[in-house]
Image (cartoon, rainbow, N blue to C red; front, side, top):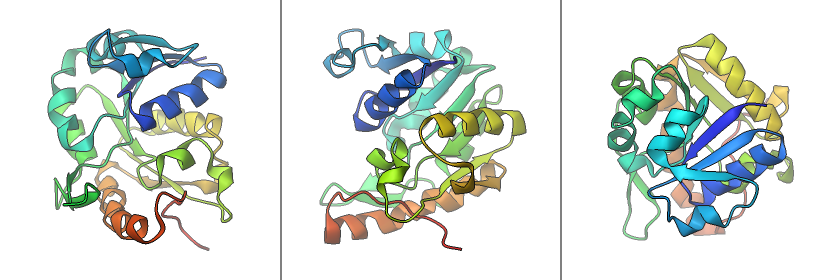
Length: 211
């Protein structure tokens, strides 16, 4: 059992919290304040503010909005020191219809910015190339999906790969791309997402490799 903190109480955060808790992990869901009503709806899961969540858990998942994640997590540098930070967010500016638009960090990535801002934290990028429901139920897709992993620390990536297995990802579906700089490629994949959503709505899909 691993102690996992999840920063963010939206659909992504609560979805991950439920599945990881069901897999036997001790999960703390971190909201903006102790009174966050969204997180309190999640049974069997502890709840705390984000600073406490980051300080008291071993692996922390960033499920906060990507356009504000860098400032938010940089403020938690002390709490995140020595931890594994799993970044599942995409940093984009919203288009007029509220769907993802331009990248906030062209030529770089949110994951790289986080690693630079948090030098004592081992950042791993993953799960950012699919709709949220696929993160915890990849088997719902007709075609075997791909989940990409990027990070500088090999042991951290092994730990995250274990968590991906708990979420239902088979080893053959996990693609280790290399160091944290490779996250700029997977983060750029979000540019296809709004076009797919406008045509098909929120039907589950992932941006995957076909071999």
